[in-house]
Length: 352
Image 1 (cartoon, rainbow, N blue to C red):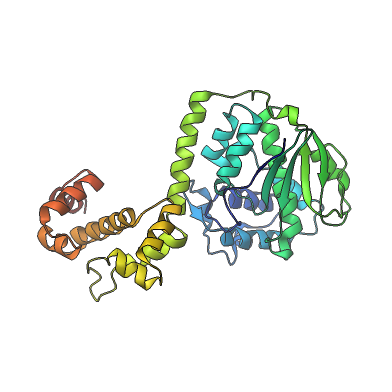
Image 2 (cartoon, rainbow, N blue to C red):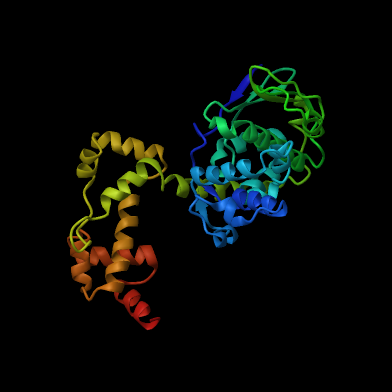
C-alpha cells in the first residue's frame, strides 16, 4: 500500500529562528571569515546571533547563505560540511518533539506537518510503499545560484537528524541527486552510506521501511504530547505575523495624524483588501487566526502606548479604541494584561 505525505508548507519562504544563521556564521569564522562579512547585506547585527528568541525571514538567511557560498564555495562538499553541523538540538522544541516521538515514522510525519519550524529550503515529500520509504527532496523553487549547496546541506541535515533520532548512522538504500557528480562523491557517501548516483531526474533518498516503526531510544509519550502542543502554539504565532494576518494588522493600525484613531472594522478591512468579508474570514481562519484576535492585538498595543505616552483618561482611550463604554475596555485590558488600565499606567510611571 502506498502512502504519500506532503509538507505542511508550499515553499521555503517562511519565518525561522536564528540558529541556522548562527551555525553558518560560526563555521565561516572557523575558516577565517569574520561575522561582519557573513552578515553583509542581511540587515542582521552580530548580537542577534546570540538571541534565542530572534526570528528572521527566509530571505535574510538566504543573504547569509549567498555570502557563505561566495566566500567559501570553492571548498569541496561545503554543503555537506555545513549539513553535518545540524543536530537535533539545533531545532529547539521542534527537535525535542521529534526525539521524543514513538517511532521514526511518527517523527517524520510530525516534521513534515510542522516543517516551517525547520530551516530547510528544499521541501521533502515522503512516500511509503511496500518495500521502501522514499523522501523526494524538491529544489525547483530554490534560487539556482545556491541550489546545489542547499540540496547538499538540507539532505545531509535530514540524514544527520534522523541518525540522532535512532541513535546510530541512518543506513540508506538509495541516494540520488539531479546534479552532475561534483567530484567529492566519496564524502557524500560517508553520509549516505550507499554510493550516491548523480545526474538523476530527482533528488531523493530511500530507507528500509522496517526502521521506521522501531521504537526510538528516547521516546516519551508525555514529553511528546507537551512538545507537540508547544510546536502548535509556536507555528500559530509565526503564521499570524505573515501573509494575510500581517496585511490585516497593517490596516488595523490607524493612520490619522496623532496615530490613535479607532481601528477599522472588518468590512472596511475586507474592502481595502478587495475581497468579501466572508472570504477574509476564511483566509484568516486558514492562517490560524481571526479578525477578533488581530483586533485585540492591535488594541492592546495602542492602549499600552496611549496609557504610557499620553495624558488621555481611561475613558478617552476607550473611545479612541472604538469601545462604546469604558467598562468594556477595562474588562478587555485586564484580560490582556492582568491589570486595569489605571494600575498599568501607575506601574509604568513608577518604573520611569
